[in-house]
Image 1 (cartoon, one colour):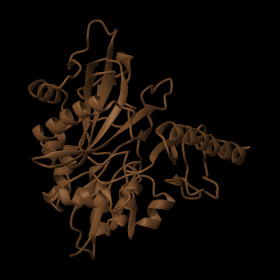
Image 2 (cartoon, one colour):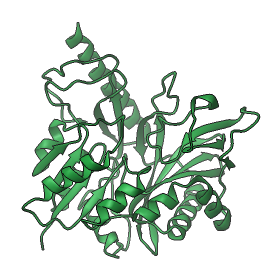
Image 3 (tube, helix red, strand yellow):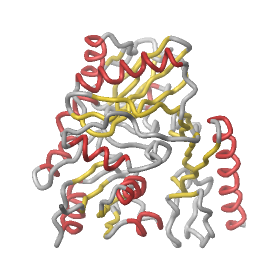
Image 4 (cartoon, rainbow, N blue to C red):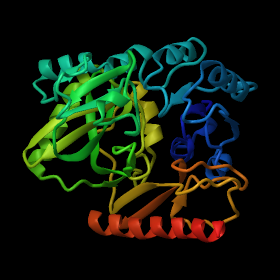
Length: 370
């Protein structure tokens, strides 16, 4: 069986690494073309429109066509970057099998009113949502339909305009995400991670990192797992997905569903096998009997550039970094510089080590800029 597979995402490195561990040969299109991805991919095409502009249909389709020329890939795995582009997913599906959720499923999962109705029907707590700007903005957040990475979320409602904007009642709690594997009928939770923001003045909810396992009481974890499985089956989802909650002691709210493999691939990588292989198997209708085993706690974080880097320097990147920029890459202030990873015996120890390593990377960049 040909195990060549197309991958397209904002950053394709984590998917490509997991694909390699699962015995697949990845052909990758993404915005970064970092050192890791180039080493992992049999072929790579960089999407030059840039991650801030988002996926552009002509560019994505051309890149996939070029990558698949002379190959017979089993299909396309789409990662982060397509949540607000179901029409592009539909166009991809006309030429290659979509390994994961269909365009219709993604549109349903990212429709705020549809998700609110689904949660109501499934008996899952979910914050109030509105397509109309609330008269009293206090206690509300503005979000962009299909947004990802938290950059699109703000409490300053006047900053968000347009038909893609919706409003969600603000609730409190710790961000906890369930990694869900589904086959279009049934679903299982592979684990929970705690997530945090790397806030800026304009992007207070920008994604920062995550650690697994999340410190959630066993009874709460069981309730969250039931909610995640119920929502996944109701949509229904296929492959790897994440269901995001806010948890406040024994109360919780389902905030959103990300219908694709996402930012926690690194921290949930099993001791044997690969999540990518589980994703493909689930797409084919096969779920494992139990979640794959993991031992130590693992954390990951995105390190964002503190200043413009016109020419990424040559750095002896340690093994605990990933998504290392190619020498000469231009990186704007606030853009991802690299990913930092940390393993430890406990989640707290992993996050503390992660913070020290993130500071080290930033200090190196300051020294190079001096």
